[in-house]
Length: 238
Ligand SMILES: *[C@@H]1O[C@H](CO)[C@@H](O)[C@H](O)[C@H]1NC(C)=O
Ligand SMILES: *[C@@H]1O[C@H](CO)[C@@H](O)[C@H](O)[C@H]1NC(C)=O
Ligand SMILES: *[C@@H]1O[C@H](CO)[C@@H](O)[C@H](O)[C@H]1NC(C)=O
Ligand SMILES: *[C@@H]1O[C@H](CO)[C@@H](O)[C@H](O)[C@H]1NC(C)=O
Ligand SMILES: *[C@@H]1O[C@H](CO)[C@@H](O)[C@H](O)[C@H]1NC(C)=O
Ligand SMILES: *[C@@H]1O[C@H](CO)[C@@H](O)[C@H](O)[C@H]1NC(C)=O
Ligand SMILES: *[C@@H]1O[C@H](CO)[C@@H](O)[C@H](O)[C@H]1NC(C)=O
Image (tube, rainbow, N blue to C red; front, side, top):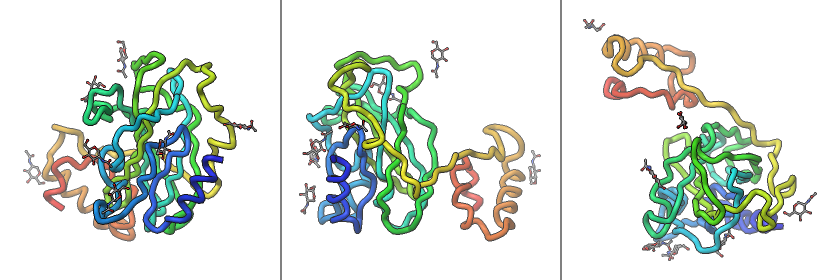
């Protein structure tokens, strides 16, 4: 019911809408573009313009499900998705000190259209960061970052309180609140090391990289999927 409520809410305001976390919840509606947020709230690091909330939702101490709707995002059929966590309440405004803990490898979503679309993605068991242990009652924030093809990012967060995995406070996760829509595909992201840091001849390697990119069929702009390659200082040559 929550997701259908959100669906209606969002359908009403679809023109500039972005990412919605449907499970375990979200900080609140930040699908807003107005005079205060002329580019839209969701572009603001770290949580799309939303401050930490007091209505935390519960999440298991051994990690749990995460469901979101990535497609309320006009003009971008594809995007890269990152999921991070921040721990504690010692940071700005009582939130985490940082959001520097990735919990899943980044992946690409392949949407059906450049227009906003409603599909949902479900990550059924998002783990805690490696070597991180928490206890029931600890606070954290889950952040979803959606990296658009032009390099800017949309942010959405949910504030959580950890509970034991068998806690009755947890909302049951099943196909009604965590599911994958057929119309959203996804892809793995990888990088191709052209020159490792400190290795080889930077000048000649950069030249061959540029040559390679320039002469590939379709030119470089057809190969946006290639962009995360760590180019280091090579950009100055482009
Ligand atoms: C917290 O409250 C806000 C404002 O009412 C609401 O939009 C949001 O969905 C709530 N979040 C959770 C996790 O309940
Ligand atoms: C824009 O929306 C935000 C969030 O609802 C609100 O805090 C702010 O006052 C609004 N700005 C204007 C100028 O209406
Ligand atoms: C978040 O908190 C800061 C400072 O505490 C405040 O200036 C800002 O208006 C708040 N933002 C929203 C969207 O409430
Ligand atoms: C991030 O915050 C945690 C505490 O929540 C701290 O232990 C860690 O050192 C911080 N990491 C960075 C890169 O600042
Ligand atoms: C986790 O901790 C173990 C033991 O301290 C260490 O060997 C390992 O490198 C750590 N893993 C990560 C990803 O930090
Ligand atoms: C799925 O979980 C919800 C609570 O989140 C519950 O109301 C519903 O009955 C469950 N559906 C199934 C098919 O188990
Ligand atoms: C690196 O490559 C450039 C261009 O091919 C060449 O002019 C230069 O001599 C090379 N430098 C070294 C140290 O080999």
